[in-house]
Length: 73
Image 1: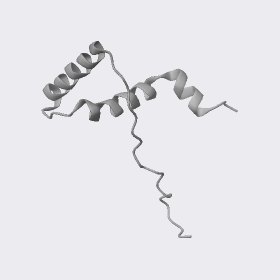
Image 2: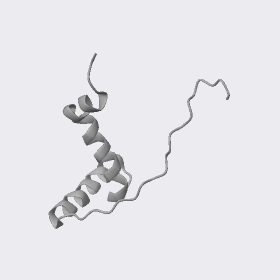
Image 3: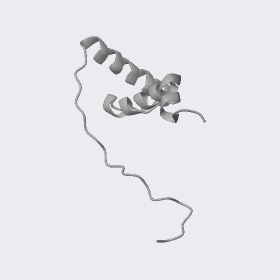
Image 4: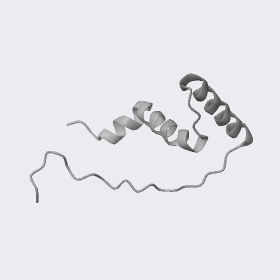
């Protein structure tokens, strides 16, 4: 085994999931994508924004982050 500082990269194979959205949530996501385009000058499809939105939500959830870190000791 090579003595490298960089560890082996984790599996990065995307996982496809299917969800059902209410019409209201679908509209809100479309509006968010429009605001994103206005803010950054680049159109991104909603399906490309959702993973980043979910990651940001989870990273900002203090209870979840504490649970992920495990017990202190």
